[in-house]
Structures are given as structure tokens and as C-alpha cells.
Length: 220
Ligand code: 3PG
Image 1 (cartoon, rainbow, N blue to C red):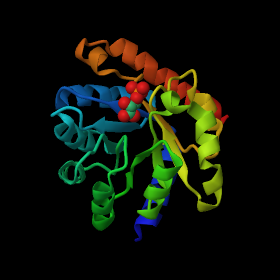
Image 2: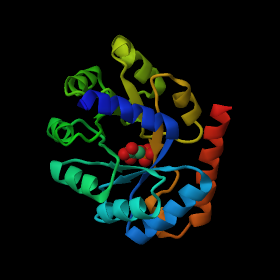
Image 3: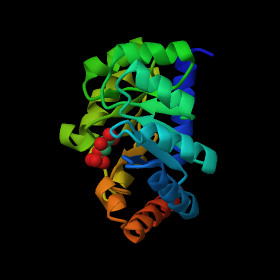
Image 4: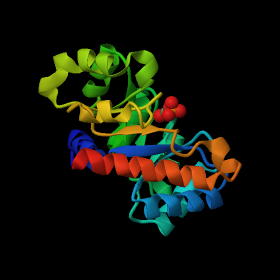
């Protein structure tokens, strides 16, 4: 299957989950605790970032315990991290920026990868590497939905779709999700690393339930 088709399929997969918690775990145990909350709360998606040493073990543990999760690796900055994410059982990977070496390695592995973009030049570079699904980062700081709409308008005919992250919350997620260019949004607001470390699981459960309710309200 071509990398472009894989990238299109990634858009479809992300559009089924709509809100993706961006996660930095301190341990695999922590990821299992969160996985349970996500599955029970009906928010079956997770982006496990390689910002901590625990990432690979967390992906492996979540994959095994919660096969129903749409499980991605985030902040994948090197081919080595990409290989570890694939081996651990991630279904897709993303990064804040566009590293052609990592995108090419993903294409070679036949593994879906969405690089981060926030300029037309980056969109064109990502598209030329075969990507039609891209992370839009840092969404709010860069100009939010207005920037995304203006910047992506010339490429409408190419079928490029975006996952905005960076400053997304339950307050602005509905506006992003109502845009047809947007397949899903992601963010750390659902389960912050500090809150997990402090054992604030009730707060996190509440955030997950609110996000799941938001998705249901958008579908209604
Ligand atoms: C990401 O990698 O997607 C961002 O760190 C998410 O940004 P946020 O912390 O503003 O949600």
C-alpha cells in the first residue's frame, strides 16, 4: 500500500476518535491506570509521547492491556524512536515538526506518520513526502483555526487533513472539530503529566468524561 493511502487511512482512523489525549508518562503503571480511565470513559485514543523514557514501555503495556485503544506515538523525533514505537505496538506516529528522514523511514516501513506543520511551505514539504494527514502545531499560538483555514485553502483539492494540537481545550475543540479540514484535535489538557504524578485521577477521569460527552454532542 502506498504511503499516501496509509496517510489517508490515518485521517479516517483519527476522525473516528476526534479527541486524542497527548500523554507523557513516568511509568508503564501510570499508563495502565490512565488506559483504564480512557476505556471506561469511552475516549479510546492515546498519543504516548517520547518525551519521557517510559514511552516505549507505556505503549507496549497499553497495547497489550487495552487493544481497543487507538494508540499512537508522539514527539517521534528520530528513526530510532520510530522503530521503537512500531515494535512496541503503536498504530501510528506523529511529531511536532517535519523531519524528512523520519517521514521517509515511515514510508519505507509502511507505517502511518503525521508530521507537524504550521506554514504553507511545511505543508508542501510534507505533501511531497507523501503525507496527506498532518499535525497542525502549535495550533493556538500560531493563529488557530483562522490560520489553518487560510493556510490550507490553496491545497483543498489535495485532500489534506489536519490534527490541531497546542493550546486546544474543551473550550475551543468544538470550533476546530466543526471544520472539515480537521480530523481530530489533540492535547495534554486531559491528563497532564503533573496531575498523573500527583495521583489526581478523579480530575483526569472528569476531563476524560467531559471530552467523551463533547464528542457525543458533536455527533448528535
Ligand atoms: C503536542 O505535542 O501536541 C502538544 O504538546 C500539545 O500541546 P498542549 O500542551 O497545549 O495541549
